[in-house]
Length: 294
Image (cartoon, one colour):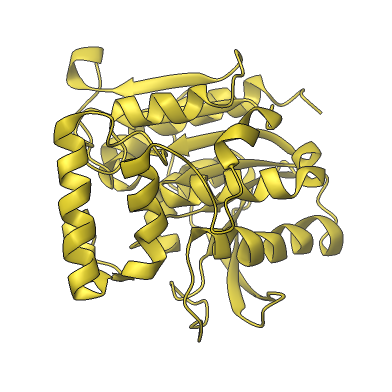
């Protein structure tokens, strides 16, 4: 793979209007070297596009153009007057962004890279909008799980306490999730608490996303970390990945015992210099390996 050199990014902001009237920020990042290959990235809760600065620099240095979507109420996207949750992000924000990329910008295909709730939202979007699956070569998920963090007693207690405190406060403080970015409302993350407590993946109207996950046959690389004890522990990420029932999918567990530089936590797995150094090449290898899919 070789050393990944730092390259100055060129940034362009597109303001995308969703069907429910919210302006979504979609950033185009590229460098001088351009191979005409595209990667779509979206973050999770308590975050914005900045969490991808390191890996986006690494990817653009290899000739990719990165498109980073910021959820409503995050980064440069506008505030949502209505309450929203992960299903809202999937239904409106992702739909508007993919429609823009493929039907207005004319992109033929993308690879996708997500962190945390971004991967959950992308999964829900593709289940409800199967026509977009043919545009995606591969997916790389960092710390993504929806219903497996409470399968053991210790994890279930943590989630139950977290939900109770969040319900009392009406919000989930960013600091409690290891972030310095936005707090999230209790409503935004209530689904996530309930999925993990009930070990299911059902939408507001009872739609069973878990049952439909095998309909996504896009190859997925799931990267999880030993130090991620609460939001996306290994068992949860493994269960989420296995639910797609695709033998082509791969789980990569980061730990010092496995030869990694550190036992990453939920944010450092995507944000830190160490992760960019040793995990970006894994993503690039995965993308290149699956590039002939379409």
